[in-house]
Image 1: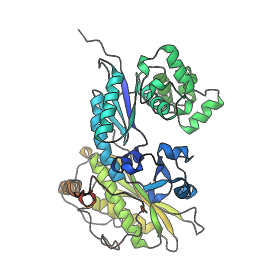
Image 2: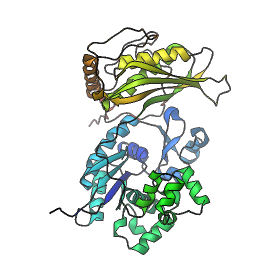
Image 3: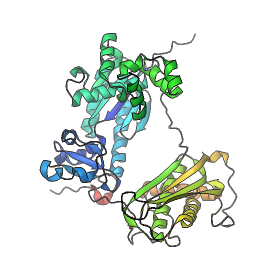
Image 4: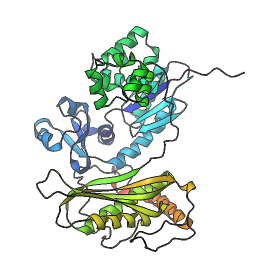
Amino acid sequence: MDRPTQAPLFALGDANNYYVSAERCLRPSLNGRPVTVLSNNDGCCIARSNEAKELGIKMGAPWFEVKHLEESAGLVALSANFELYGEISDRVMSLAAGLGHRQEIYCIDESFLDMSGIRGDLRARAFAIRSRILQWVGIPCCVGIGPTKTLAKLANHVAKTAERKPGSYPAELAQVCNLATLTPPDMEQILRATPVGEVWGVGRRISKQLIDQGVATALDLARMEPAIARRGWSVIFERTVRELRGESCLDLEDIPPNKQEIACTRSFGRPITELRDLIEAVSDFSCRAAEKLRRQNGVAGQVMVFIRTSPFRKTPQYSRSMVVPLRSPTSDTPALATAAAHALRMIYRPGFVYAKAGVMLLDLAPSSRVQLELAFDTSTDDGGVPAAGGAHRFELMRAVDGLNERYGRGTLTIGARGTQRLAGSGRNWQMKQERRTPAYTTRWSDMPVVRA
């Protein structure tokens, strides 16, 4: 006799103002002060503390527009420290996993949990996990619980908003919100108070279209016929409507799906004019992209490279990209880096001031589908692009990845190639991170020392 299936129930744990919170957990002096974390090259605000939000700083605000608040309001601005944020995220996720049976890490500061069939007071259980994360790691978070992933995401929005903006939602839903326990009238009230743009899966463009058609709240969207959502937008949007109505359409992804494309792009810390600097940058991007590719046990069939000037500078403009097909799909770093450098030489034009470059790996496939060559072919019959590496090259790259994972990124990498300068002699293309905090938890040299 088959066991009855349990009703699905999901939780979404989300760290509050994560980048700022990660900085604060190792620098308590930042607590209570307006803090913002800046994007690459310290360009714009990508995270804000509640105090910074109260100053009127918007997400994505250019730094030069709010810089005056340093003196007038005591604003603290920090360069993004992704190495630190990633390591602290691992600690948070390991504790959040205790909330349910299974966990899907959605992004660096969010994870879905399967709570189906768990007995007892689920809100109390979520508060206990939340308190443990705050005490053991120092990161504040909120938890939303619902019968679908979309409703769990909505519940998390309610929990965070009720805490940050008292009066917007009932105070008893702050920090932890379980929509599964609400009465139909209370649930309707929550949906009516939520703008349609706050629903997971409703982007800015779709939100505007919905509002133009009189669908302004989450309640309006939940009352939409799924067939209309499908005809007017897509099958994926139909699932959003069904989930909002309480019909579970999305399960947890225990193993994240492999990426169809892998890109590594950067804006330069200062203008670049020389080819040798561009080759060095593109070689570095190729190494990072290749590591990500091997992490998903994949191979690439094509490499795309682009360079461009800044549209914000009053200098001659130039933008160009090129796709190089590989003789055989590969994840071999030297092969990918050489292909990228070959493409760069073809599209580079002297006399321009370059501001950004990038490498994208295309035509990805699982390595198990590719018959690796018996030996590494260094011939360059196709214009300077080497063939894919053989089995021993694949094992060599895995060994290099293991060493870099154990001893730190860049411990072992490809050597100087053509005009590429040796590491340590200065890199003009590196991002500006003048306000970056130390990597307290991942580098011995940055570890704080307390002396009695």
